Amino acid sequence: MINFEVENSAGNQELIEVPEGIDLSLMEVLKGSGYPILATCGGMALCATCRIEVISGEENLPEPQDNELDMLDTLPDAGPQTRLSCQIKIGENLNGLRFKFLAE
Image (cartoon, rainbow, N blue to C red; front, side, top):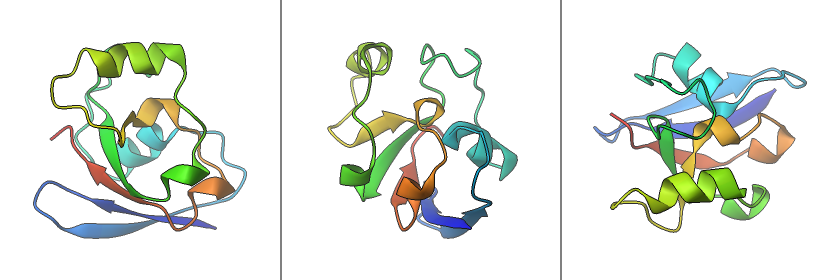
């Protein structure tokens, strides 16, 4: 199992477990876990309704690609740890990471 933590805007933390080998994005897992993600762009990095902050473990994630960076550049409150969860694939590299859900 792949385990990571997500903190919501109220500061509550939830441990999420996902089976290994699942072909989903972090956005899809968060949406399936009840997080209010609109995903109006369908995961194409065009709406930022799935944005998160990487609290710890950022070094385990691949660098954001141009389409994600372009969208993040349009957000006035995006910091260096802000990512779009639709652009992060579920994999063993997420084990132990901590995220904060920002799109509420």
